[in-house]
Image (cartoon, rainbow over all chains, first blue to last red; front, side, top):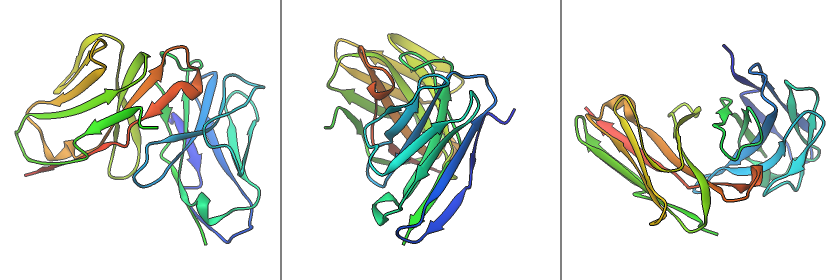
Length: 114
Length: 111
C-alpha cells in the first residue's frame, strides 16, 4: 500500500518562483492536511481539507494556496516563493477531520528557496 | 505559545536501557498522539490515547489527564529506536487546527 505519496521529494527555487507540491492518498480518507516543519519548532498546520470540496486555513496559511482536486489529491501552491518558506513540508490524511483519528503522513518535501 | 512541552530535548542512551520521554501540556485535550520521525524524515503515528495506558511491542504510552502529562517508554532500547519522538495534543473542541505539536525529543541509542 502506498499510503500518502508526496512529490517532489526535494526542490530548490529562486525567490519569486512558483511551484505546486502534490499529495495523494489511497486510503479513501476524507480529510487531508499540509504541515511545515522548521528547525526548533513543532509541525505547524498550513491548510487542511475536512472533506472533498472544502479547504480551511490553519496556523500559518500566508503565502500558500491549496486545492482539493478530488478525494485522493490535495495540492499546496506557492505563488511567489520567499526564503522564509524554506522548510520541510508534510502532507497527511485521516479518515475524518481529526479530533480522534490517527493521521498518516507522507515522506515529506524538502524545499529550499534561495 | 508553548502549549506542549517535551523533555528531554535530546537523549543519548546505551542499547538495552529503559527510556522515558515526557510530554506536558497546558490546555484541555480530547486526545494525545505520540509520533516517531525517522532519521530519513518519515513520520509514523505510534499511539493515540485519551486515558490510561497503551502498549505496542516495546513501546508503552501513558497519560494522566488530571496532571496534564504523558510519557512514552521504550523497554530494551535498540539502535533502531533512534529517532525524533513527537508528542501532539488535540485541544478539546478543536478541529484540524486543534492539533498542537511539541518540538520533539531527539533520541540516540548507541550500540
